[in-house]
Length: 255
Image (cartoon, rainbow, N blue to C red; front, side, top):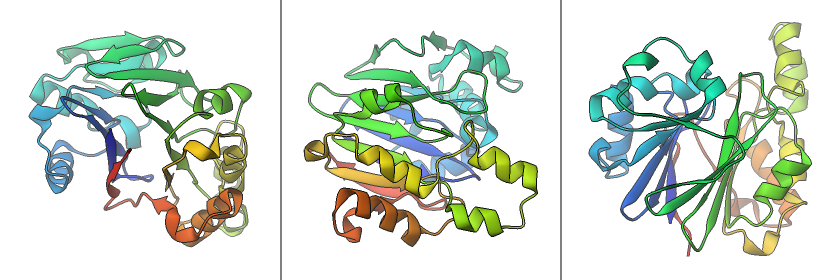
């Protein structure tokens, strides 16, 4: 199994998980044109995709989902709450698959395990992907950690982990106070230190890749996120990857 990001941040998110004949797109916050260009950078075309998974209805995750699904007749997997709260255009989708936020399901050669997270959306989930050998965990857009999150992600071989903001940078930013409270609140986004604390609860002997994702362009810096995660892991900072807004990150293999 391998995975790559098409871009990660407040202006759009999309991740590809590839297990041979099964290729899944996790979220699509970009226009159809933009996502096609970004897929091409990874030597992929949309006809190769087996489906689109959605975490929640916020525009930076769902903005391009419906257009891409209609154009290429792709099934879309999402919770009932996300479907109900999603913007217009969902009614004309060719193939909607409503999922249970606690129940694993197969898509081709990948077992997909959704899990609920605390976020200010209708029924948000994140996902773990299993190809029969390796587990890839994705955790972005959660305001706090729960015992269930730690349990689901404990045995992952790779982790894409939200490091949205640095607490001090957010506190000093020009953002309105209500927005600061939303971002830093229980249903907002993970800061660097809270994200790093999750790593202390995982089976670190299994981890081949850790990627910092969903970084705020105004309230974080890649170096701060990398330092926090590397300190928790006790590893060199160069071992930590970063998912950028424009370039995401290129293919990472699980061996």
